[in-house]
Amino acid sequence: RKEVEQDPGPFNVPEGATVAFNCTYSNSASQSFFWYRQDCRKEPKLLMSVYSSGNEDGRFTAQLNRASQYISLLIRDSKLSDSATYLCVVNSQAGTALIFGKGTTLSVSS
Amino acid sequence: GEEVAQTPKHLVRGEGQKAKLYCAPIKGHSYVFWYQQVLKNEFKFLISFQNENVFDETGMPKERFSAKCLPNSPCSLEIQATKLEDSAVYFCASSQFTSAGGSPLHFGNGTRLTVT
Image (cartoon, rainbow over all chains, first blue to last red; front, side):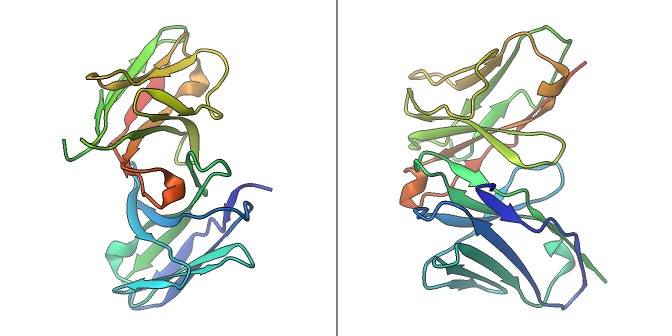
């Protein structure tokens, strides 16, 4: 089983739609969770950290379910500029690196 | 500096040649990470440093790849005798604390290595 697994998509949604991405991780001892965003041919950028109680940043909501080893990202009121690849990131078993999922591609159209 | 600085932006090498990539972490960040991304596929972790000490090298290929972070110098990733499959974007990232402590990574723009 891969350390971090994501549905690659693509998710094709119209502007204004709500879309959710899921991610599962294999290491039950993981403590740090993040969502990153990568635009074509560019470096990944931190979208948000994911906290145990769940957290929200504007149109973005992240949830963590430790029992199921599952992380989610919800995007409300999608914008064209949200089109990107969303990467689920979890710290490694040793805690010495961050492990990336393959990413979920989102395409928002007008 | 305020950003992770990677050089060069692009690097072209013939098979069998050496490639050397550089990374200057954000000032004050103690941890440096190297990742390889082949053709927009997943990020493969290569190696991490805590200051000049290797922190985790479990992702480094046993042959041909080496890396260093020396005091007062940019960190470097060197590939001896490059192969076609080494063609990728190599990203460097830095963080203030360990990833287990919840510290996110800040990435440089990457070096695109093309082996011909």
